[in-house]
Image (cartoon, rainbow, N blue to C red; front, side):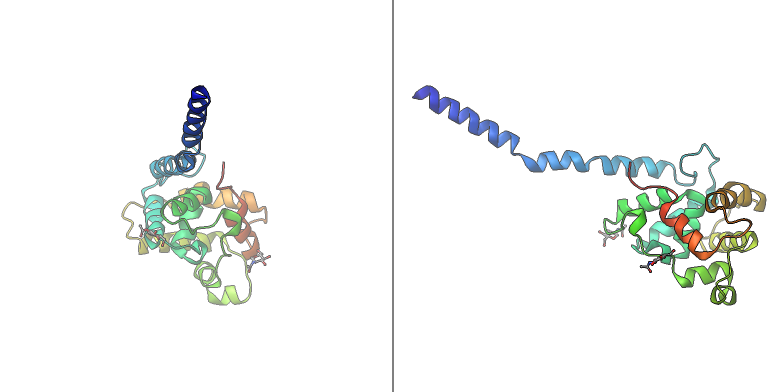
Length: 192
Ligand SMILES: *[C@@H]1O[C@H](CO)[C@@H](O)[C@H](O)[C@H]1NC(C)=O
Ligand SMILES: *[C@@H]1O[C@H](CO)[C@@H](O)[C@H](O)[C@H]1NC(C)=O
């Protein structure tokens, strides 16, 4: 009898220990901060590349994060940051500071206002695609607004940031709204 009680007590103790669910859940949540820390170190370096660090891109990413938004593709700062940082880094860094930021595919569409900032309002109304010159002007405009002091050259903007997007969308020398919007949502995943 005493043995049974002892066994029962042991079983209960075991149950109590293994039902420490919060501890288990906590260890599952821990990878997020590690990701966040890791991504924090790559601010200014395009996702998954050994590309050179760009101070201007880092400034854009910080300008985006400062807004702490959830519809991040409604913020020109975040769209510009995504083009140089990569969508994954920008999305994850936003998720790190605000858990309401959805996964890549569920983030609301690129806003018409931001598209008009990129191509101009007449071109946006005519549903015209983004040209290389539109993109260069957009990135430099957003860098200027972000107070950038160390600028990339236009050649760097083209080869490091515009060309990879153009390659992904495969729409020739310009990129229509829907393809650019797809690039924002599907070019990289924000989960491992
Ligand atoms: C960002 O917003 C989230 C959700 O409202 C909030 O919990 C968090 O403290 C904010 N972070 C910053 C840095 O403002
Ligand atoms: C987002 O844009 C895509 C096209 O790029 C469209 O098919 C979809 O309906 C839009 N979603 C919303 C919620 O507007």
